[in-house]
Image (tube, rainbow, N blue to C red; front, side, top):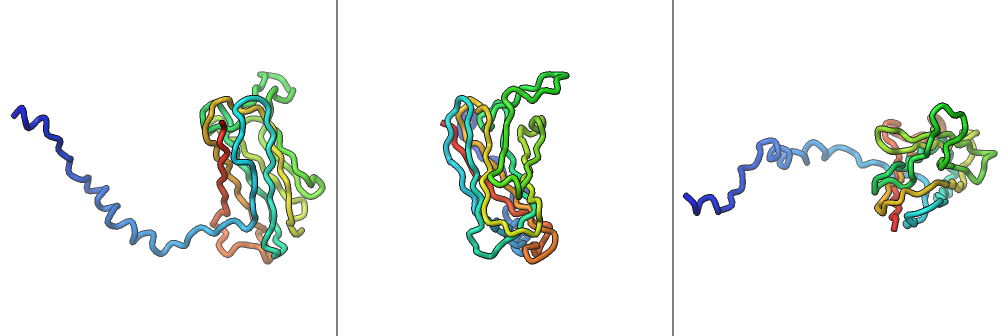
Length: 191
């Protein structure tokens, strides 16, 4: 009996886990894969861990298809854990002044694009959403530089930047399946 307790035993496989392993492929085999983004995105892959920092997200249409775009939703992690790129802005209660270390977003062509965002990050998921919208939804896209400036979160780690393309609802660049988001995830390593 004493020897039996020292021998490792593997528990029997959970029936639910077994079912998923055996049947999952049949459920997803007919699903189409997510389409890739239509535009090309470039940004730095590394960042320092201290101080104010600015980075550029360069967006270009390298397809020569003269694409149109309605908007971009760019989500940046904000807070005080390893995965947050920028520190949470300090908002003074009852003040109408901008936050101390606010995160700013500007575009290279303000006559063609407008930036909107919340003053402070979402408290539930530590993200800040920036919308970059085309003023003329029928204009050919070409290229755009989006610049972000903020105070870095001082913890080293990987931060994921999520970019969602919002194609036009009408016209030649309207997606075949409007239920599918065109999403690109990019990573910045803080060292």
